[in-house]
Amino acid sequence: MSLTHPIPLPQAGEGTLPSRRTTRVPSAAKRERDRVRVRELTGSMPSLRRLQSVAVSLAFPAVLLLLWELSARYGWLPEQILPDPRLVIQTIQEFVASGELLDDTRISLARVAQGFLFGGLAGLLLGIAMGLWPRFQAYVDPLFLAVSQVPTLGWMPLLILLVGIDEELKVTIIAWAAFVPVTLNTYRGIRGVPARYREVGQVLTFGPWSALTKIVLPAAVPTIFVGIREGLANSWQTLVAAELFASSEGLGYLMAWGRQLFQLDLVITAMIVVGAIGLLLNGGLGAIERRLQRWQVAS
Amino acid sequence: MTVTALALPPTRASTRWRAIALPLGLLVAWEVAAHTGLVRALFLPPLEALAARAWTEIVDGELSLDIAMSLARDLAGFAIAAVIGVPLGLALGLSRLVERVFGPTFSAYRQIALFAWVPLISMWFGTGEEAKIAFVALAALNPIVFNSAEGARSIPAHYREVARVLTFGRWQLLRYVALPGAFPSIVTGLHLGLIYAWLATVGAEFFLNLGPGLGGRINEGRELFQMDLLLLCVLLLGLIGVLLNKLAGLAEARLLAWQRR
Image (cartoon, rainbow over all chains, first blue to last red; front, side, top):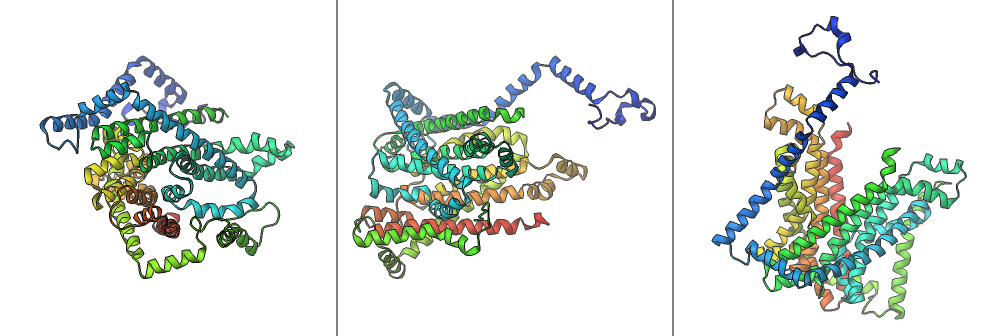
């Protein structure tokens, strides 16, 4: 144990003569034990420090809120530029009470779920196919790359002409937003599986299916998850854009409506909900990811 | 794209053929469908009609002006984001105090879907040029700040220790340790920022629709149901995106060449 650690040299400040007392210098293991004990004894310290850091983190938003409130109270900025924060709170309360906010949120979430599911599944399949069969990849990749270079939003007017402005438009464009990153990362993940992993499968005489499910996919999971996270974030972004563009319900519509009525309080309300859901989606996926990858830490 | 087959490495010619086979097949199918009336020409104009439209738009029309306007917005927004974003990111990455005070607010901003800013921006800046540039800058800011901060954070602690031993001042630390150390990450952030900026330029021109620009022309094609104009502009969007990306990649390789030595 102590061999793996660098031998601790006595510090000049300790006032000891190194030549005589080298044997008395506590081993690295003992020092570590002491450190742990010190930490146990002063257990309240970290939480106090955490409290302090939370306070520091909240300082800036608090100052912003204060400025906002003051500006509203003394009319520094016209109401069309910055509404009274109390008006925003009131609007949130009204829209929550009437169920309108919940309805719009539900509709938006359903659209994202549908589109993300389609796009993500298609992306996984295409990515796996491209990763497993180089020949297939050689045919498909250039076209895929070319088509994916156009910003997602650029396809929207074209799609409107082809499928109209109803649900199909939103689901298709959201699916596309998820499809591109999921495909790319799945392909990269599978490509990046070291050849010797596959060789192990051959040694164990795994069939193609068990090789895929037991070796290739688990090894590619971290990269695939990068794609899934990016895909979901993209889907959420695109949903807002699609609903702003053409919609009669949903959070994006709420924003567009607020903009037309010059009700900034409504716009800010919708923005808060959009931000909160984005945070939840990302956080939720992060939790799933950690869970799925727990075995990796153990190994 | 590199192709690695399991058995024989394919020859160059067959690689090239595979790459263009599918796009070529699609184009042929397009032509056939357009000429045999399988798909109505309203939805799928034949390729020569597209080429003809491109020619007239560029020669007689104002398509070049539209492209120039879109690019100008894109670059203006990007420049603003770079000037604000790199110092902000470095400050976040270098100073624990700045990180603790502004970090959470920046994280919160990152959570809000980009397009959710459109209504707010249109109310604050109107729907003119300022609003579009502000939106582009806001879009590019995120990856630039994030990557600059990551780069500054990832500078090894002993580099800073060396700086302390040499009794570097704040500016010397910035000039000789922080900037070179975070440089690769900053460049990556700028590259990503350029991609985001182009996406946002398209979005801004869709949603804040005033004045010339590629996004405006796409909207025009949709409203007048002129599929040729629409397809042409979508194609241009993709091409310019690829070009910007390629240029940024080249610049990145050039700027980071010293690292490999």
